[in-house]
Length: 630
Image 1 (cartoon, rainbow, N blue to C red):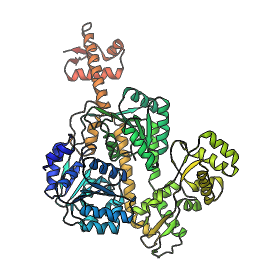
Image 2 (image 1 turned 180 degrees about the horizontal axis):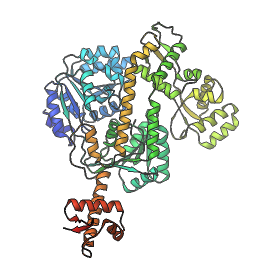
Image 3 (image 1 turned 90 degrees about the horizontal axis):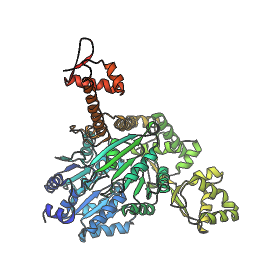
Image 4 (image 1 turned 30 degrees about the vertical axis):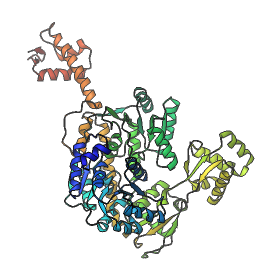
């Protein structure tokens, strides 16, 4: 079957069909390809069709389990065999899965970059007939990308495992620096770069400064009846704003990274099926969202970068119909964003402090390279040295990115609770069970929404607040679950920490300090770029975006807030110019001061219009410093 026939059989018409066909032809010619297609540009088609045509299995490396599952289900619905090897599979199940790939005509294997580091999986990949290797969300390989993931730097192990197989890397957002990094770290050879324009003819970018952001959201939702996404920057906001919208009679749900997989799926399906029209979410609600009739994407916080913004905004109007991307802001939101960036820029001095304390905490001597995997509880560590927990999380994360240490994946996981009884039953229970009363009251004060959804909790925080042992808190929570009051899913905060370099204190950190300073610099630059985009209200929004991604500026889009304001100003100026010209029917010569008095318009606008009439030679200046018609 030819590529075009497969496109017509399995996939609906797409706005980027010409680019897709060229990419597919290039991949089939066994060339390495880097494809930059906007959100909704059909990137997956570019590797799925060549893989169907060629014998063997296509390996797809992608960062999110949800994204893998979405694509696997999509392929299965078309009668195409695909499998995702995730942490949910046991070793025996992984072996069976690879046997099926060798003998069961499975065409697609989806893996995370972390899973790819497993020796078992590497040995199994060596045995497969691999027809193509696809790297999804390829911008994650670059520190200049908006979602850098160190695990992506290890993907090139596939070059050793399958040396004769060609690569295709796909992403929606990449500047020239990111393109360089993708090419370098994936070792792409004789690379063909395909880049589609970032210009979206059907998407109107609009930015509004408003002191009452939520009222503006209500106005938009009242006017627009189709599905909407509202992006916020914190998990707490998702539920708070969703509840606010429900109180104002809008059907709404929410989504963030701290929710359980089950709650995420319920929320996602309710929105996809339009049982709830509005999705309030953090940027965890992103990759793989394929709903084509989203009419508006609203940001009520400053997006983390221009790249983040374009990906999120691009989820509107994927059906080709007119859609809107709206940013709502005021001085307070800009200031809050700047403060957040400042807090997240960890100083070298602080990193040195944390590194030294980690070694002290785990009793590692200077000059020692320990091969032991240490049990590590970040909450206990922070409590002992009175450290800021979020800053310590960020610092340890940086040390891992710089290969100073490594952590097991449960480092940031939280236990989950949800009250299963109604509030009346809970009140009765607290009266009857003195031991649990203080804990239950603290849970209700500290965690909103515990009656509606599973909420992540921190047992160490609860123990410190109640001045009791963490083990006692866990025992009490388990008892509450046994009595049917709550559902409690325990997740140990302990993780295994392994140091990868010898302890040399300052020398160790000095060695990586340039990299860390570079990361801070990149974050600050990206923060400045998005603030500039938001506050620069004299240049067409589409032009600003094209300029950022190093495309030649085209004509003004005509539909963004800047263009609409310019049209309005131009129309007002035409009316004002007519009024000024009519004044010369009564007087031959008039001064600018007289014009201002006679028309009662804003002086600045009158002076600008007079200047325009002079440039067009409709009027001229006399020796008396007055104006007359030409």
